[in-house]
Structure formats: structure tokens, C-alpha cells
Length: 279
Image 1 (cartoon, rainbow, N blue to C red):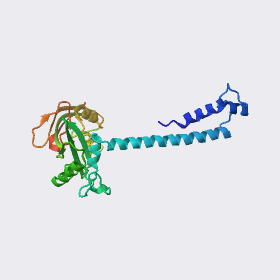
Image 2: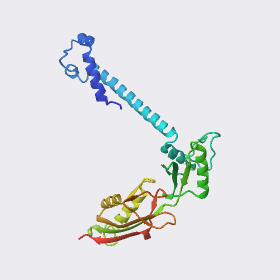
Image 3: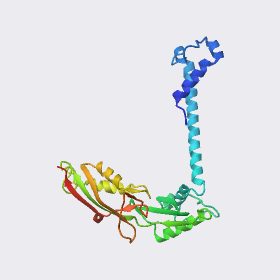
Image 4: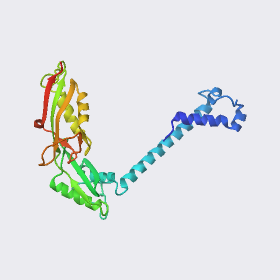
């Protein structure tokens, strides 16, 4: 890690006055510090500061280079999960790979349709989940897109690795909550009195769901924490939290859950908020 300019400058000043030849040349007192014997605007002090600054910049360059090399090695090393995530995001729909290679001739961001990806290994099998953005919301790949993507991954993956590809409509989330609100700030319909277009509880819930890490855990208590930060919301109580994917039945969420599709959707009919004035 690069040292600060002050650290380097102080070390150079200490070495300067500790040098016997310099001590004899300047007639320095070995019992006094550099700053006690040289002015801040002296040529010696300014010269050492310039050297310290140059060393600091060089050390920063070395740090950045080390970080870049470490990242490149981590992404290129086979059989690491992050490598598969990066490869999934690099997929370009409609483009062919360079012959006998695992990359494209040119990078085309517009053709890179996968915005979110995850990779995890379960019982010796790799599961890769992907989604794209449509109208600022996560959505599954079409059948054609998924077929093309899976073909691409089979060509770039390491030999012997079995992959299951998942790109589904987001899991459904159903919530029933009691929302105790401050009647000085929020009305009985959950809207701000100062701006009826804003519903703090609903907005907080939707923002929480949208901003969950892809294929990350939905934690019930974390949602409560987010609601407690919403304007005018005093006591949020989750009475019921259920989730389901595809045509399966709703299942109670016991504390936390990772959505099958990697993300959740919640519709107005699946969000029941019982507003109660906290008087």
C-alpha cells in the first residue's frame, strides 16, 4: 500500500540528517531534528518534498498495477465462479466468437443483453442464473436468447463442467403488513400529507426489492429495517411473507430466502398494507 507523502517526506528528512557526510558538510547538530535546523522553505526541504511526492506517485502506480493484475488473474483463472459470471455478462447476442477462441473479435455493448448474472456450484454442478433489463426492470431471456446464450457458454466453459442455465420470470413475493404511521406526516391511505403522490411504505418496499443483489438473499428483518427509515413510518410489522416461483404454490419465508430466478417481483395485489395511526 502506498505510503503518504508526509510519511515518505519524514523518512527522507530523517535519513538526510543521519548521514555523516551531510552532517559534517552542514555542521548539523545530531541531537536536533531536520525541522529544527532547516526552514520549511529551504532548498533542502523543498527538494526532499519533491522527491517524496515522486515516490508517492510511483508507489500508487505500483499499487494500481498490482490490483489490475490480481483482478485479471482472478477473472481468467478457470473454474472460479466469478469467471463464469464475467463470461455470462460478456455474451453478445447475434455475434459469433472468434474461431477456436472464447472471445469476440470486437466488444459490442449494445449486443451484451445480460445485465445480471450469478454462478454457484451445488453437488458438483454449476448453476448459472441470468437476467436482462427491460424498461428498467429485470426480465428473463427469450427462448431464442437463452438458446444462443447456452450455446455460447458451452463453447467457452471449461471441459468437464456441467452447467444448468436459469433465466426465469422473477419469483412472486406476497406480503401482508401492519404499518403504524405518524398521522402528522402520513394520511390514512399511506400517502404523505405534504405530497399525496408519495407513499413512503410502498416506495420503501419496492425500492428494497429492486435493489436486492442479484441471486442474493431476501431477509425479512432487513425489509423491516428499510421501512423504519421511511418518512412517517413508525412501526412496520410483517404479518406474512411468502414467495413462489413459476407455477408452484406460495411457501412461507422463514427468515430469509434466495429467489429461484435470482430476483423477486411484487404486484399491487400481492402487497397488503394495513395502515394504523400511531396516536
